[in-house]
Image (tube, rainbow over all chains, first blue to last red; front, side, top):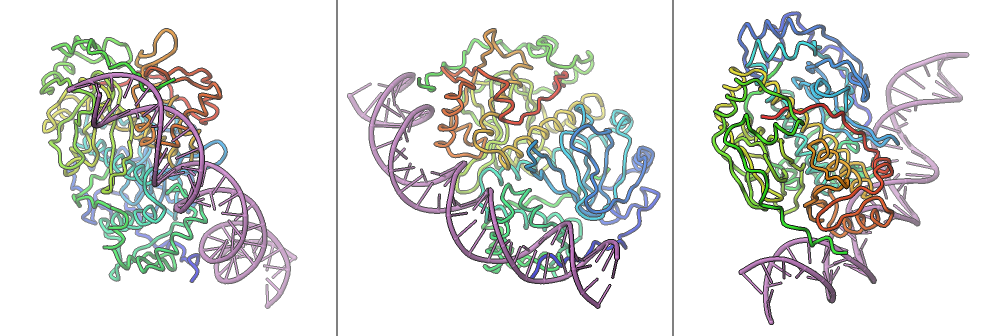
Length: 258
Length: 258
DNA sequence: CGGGGTCTTGAAACGGCTCAACAAGAGTGG
DNA sequence: CCACTCTTGTTGAGCCGTTTCAAGACCCCG
């Protein structure tokens, strides 16, 4: 039952509209509504929309231009590497996630961002960030909100790599991604969701070796807790998985979206 | 050479002034200067100043009141625990650090904060946070800045627990705290600094067991890389320590301070 | 003087890592 | 259409870094 026969991400993803007011993401209902003036400001702040292939590096780990991004479609991840090549994935990015903020506040990027699947992003002018706080305080507030939320996610990841066993780690990863996709309405009728991560990605995110990640995945699968085929994830026993992971679900309020 | 005979944190810490304009921290030169109106706003937002003993829990891990804090003096740390008691320290807080933000944005706190030494904090009214963005956009910007910076620290910690060996982990911890204290002007003439952490704290922060943390500390000490006596830390070979840790120093710009 | 917190040390067990090899599909080019 | 390579997944064997358990020392404090 090979996991690797996953379908290529369809290039028939929803096109990126020119106007933020017609944004497909905003229409999903998972995000805050914004006033017309706020939408206008965002649209003006946006310098481009880009479509990039899987594997494309959006932010290089060293110096980078200070551009800001919102992921519009597809998956990506933030990562850091040590000089000898060991890599840690910090967190995964899903549609609606904002990134590039930290590098605005320090000299150059301190982490990298890579597209995991083919992906679309909105690019914003970093230099005008301060202007945003002046002109649209509400958006400034939202930005802090987003930042705080990502920090929460990192807290959880830190707890995971620091204190959880391999079984627990894999379980949290599966549940957490599933929940996030669910919130975005990206879980299919049959309760399955797209899952484009390779085992190497999971290993890098969980602080485990590739081989051990594989074995752990197999163990969970043998216990009937989940299945992972053709690039799709199905939680066969969410209850048991949640309990095993000691996972605390977050409330499902609407998210801000820049 | 017992490490445990550390002196109690002196209660003769600088008193907390009534007026933010006379704040001892701001006078240290490590922080941004603020306009009078901004200082006034902060002073008005502040609901109290508190002095708490070592071990005091400032934010409980479950539900909490949504108060915001700036650590004025002393050390503290953020942490998360699993239901069976395993604890992960997320990061350490030093004077000038702001905390409590995430809980404003989600139902209740998702982490706890505990004073490591006797500590003084400024308490702010969480409900008026939105007002801050409206009235003082600059402070809103600073808040995002602080949040992004803490996230950077978590990124580093995640890389540490996920990918570094025990030796490397301990080395990063020592260097990083030293650098942060240095920036605050808290390193003494003789290049030593206060170091109130117990080995248990270090273990909890690094994702290691207490015993192994101890052995690793001893090994580093035997190599002449550092010494840790009477609650003071001395980096005997910062170069070697930095190299061992593969540690990338951050630029030393001034910090925002709420 | 007793008790609790911290540090210290040894011995043994184990979880996860490394090394190594192979299988299966996808893409490429002759 | 077949060789070739590349990527990803799979599996076994053995080692080692780290954990766990256990016990003792030292110090401070009530």
